Image (tube, rainbow, N blue to C red; front, side):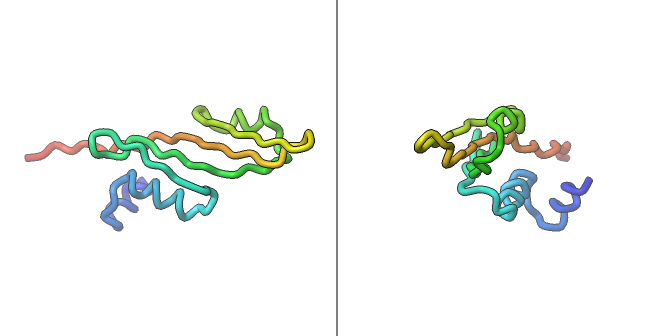
Length: 96
């Protein structure tokens, strides 16, 4: 219901709202849109993770993700994650 109110007030599509929410969260180094048939199908976000977190815990956080782990002198120095999020499809309405 809350997303529906945001859409009505802003005039934005559900996919545009999701992209803006990701941008505003300031967690992501980059955001990539996957477009199919002229519509946003999925959003990929690249974020840097805390190197102190256990790798197994990182893997459990998302169903679809790529982890990049950089190591120097035997220690993890950087962990980047790219995860994919399907965009909520707009509710189809019957046109007259």
